[in-house]
Image 1 (cartoon, rainbow, N blue to C red):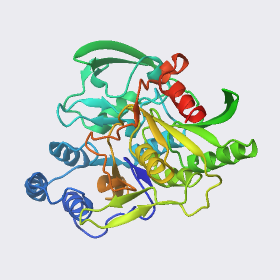
Image 2: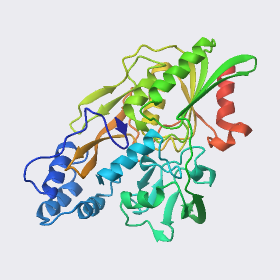
Image 3: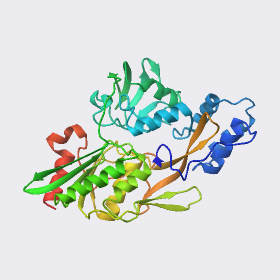
Length: 379
């Protein structure tokens, strides 16, 4: 399952059948699944969609944009393939993957959740929360998400961005190129004569959970009992993979999926944990979605302390409903709650136990990374 993007086999729904037109299929899918289907704004838009005599994928997506919910959108089969390729790691372009870019409901402009660490976008200086004012001279205000991503994707050429940060606009040029980076990095090191472990998760690909468990197993083989889990600039990904990663440290429920009607489903993996470790978790403004659930879950179930900055606040779980052979709709279908029933959504992120500078490039100077070491070696 994806959180913040798509999909679990349990939530994926097959193409609609019968003679219903596109607008009817879209309305039915939203009525049945949308977390906010009871709102007045959806009911008003619903009436307009039902009356549309000649709906197209493009026109329907433009209509849905009126709700100001960047996570509710229609995608073509080509766009879905691109999303899956990004998360699999085969196509990451400049490092702004699909679920790391959203449309800001306040301005209608594209906004960066986070660039992937070590990506061309990250190296060019892009940061979590940056607003993309324009791409190659074209304003993003009023564009749908898929139009923005079409201009950002690709592994050749360059993209010229105008970025707004702290009310100041800056120009940034980023080279589109093929780049590779492991989704999970791990190592051992010694600090104050104590052996420590480090596990960094770039994003949750389908294999990330298994890789985290393998990393924990390797740390255990080296006698490591204290570990830093680095989730900074992790935009999320597959929820199932996150749950498997969490199971390396705890067999408790990591959090909850909460439906529109209030029903809850636990988020956990059934595997027995390799090792009960003393943990600290690094978070920042680019920690989002599945990464936020893992951070909260480890905090609530293992006592791990959170170090860094308040997270992005994007705790929604999406479902994907196929409309026909060529298109489907991504729908926010549930909210995410921590194990202790704390929600982190609509910009209300997790608050760290210790607030310190959390920018990844500050690591050598100390900040969050050095504070984590200090907490593990001198608890």
